[in-house]
Image 1 (cartoon, rainbow, N blue to C red):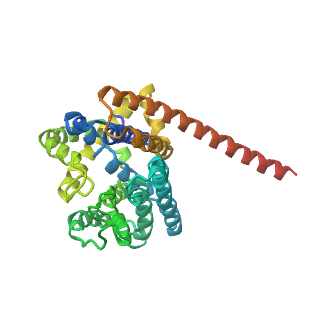
Image 2 (image 1 turned 180 degrees about the vertical axis):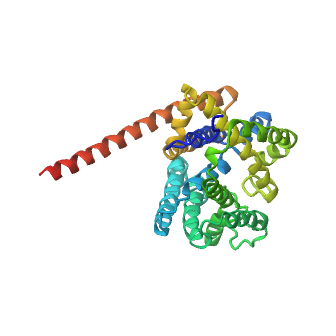
Image 3 (image 1 turned 90 degrees about the vertical axis):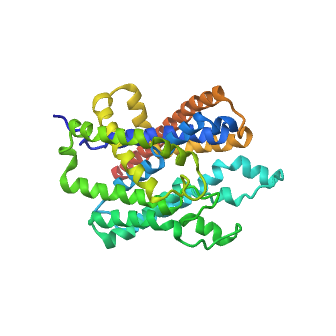
Length: 362
């Protein structure tokens, strides 16, 4: 029987999951920023926000945690990479909100600019998570249960932590990066670091028992059936949380109950992705999605730069047809930009290598 989990040099299932996550992110960003309010509040908005919820950020962070595991990397590597991601996220905030910030500073828009500059999105969260994992691995080593217990502790207690920043002061912006229901805090360290921990722990377990050689399609099907039944009976709960973004027990600041629901969902989603990869991984559509996943950071940055700046002009004004058209157009444009960026990188790297060879020849 064929293995359900690919065991090749590059994890094709992971690329598929990351590619799907970015596509779902694009559609939900368009829904949140472009759609008329009645569309956002309706069934289309609820479906869109669910697709842009559990299959996106939680899974993206778990996959990131999975690949952060490495016995050879030193703490300094994690700290340096974490800082680059964090400050890269701040620069992206400025870039995606450039049109709005221009209107604020030069055209007199009466809007607080700092909630946009210091918005707590995926990249700052990723940066803090990478640095923290680098420190935790010194303490927890390869004892996976410690990472799992910490994830449970975070999601069960963080909502009771005191807020030390209020009224848009300096401490509020600091507080927002760690926890709290601030309007500009989308992916604070708590609870979202828990998904990094789960992905990291799963990698330790997978390597320990050599999971890719033991998990077959039959295993996936057997485990998928009860998960699908569970999701069918609880989907309305998950949709209501995903559609309620802000506030306590909203999507951004969800409780341990929703955390548990997402873990069950991700387990089924992973098994389904494994089956798709095994039977349809070579189709042109799946290969395109995996290409997006392979270039996930570049794709993510370009889509935000485009959507974020257009949102200043199009905020809450588009109908169903326009939303679909913008989704298709943005995916095409971002794909072209990403392809061009990767080609440019290849040319630069090739020239450097040729330059180094020429110097050595002399």
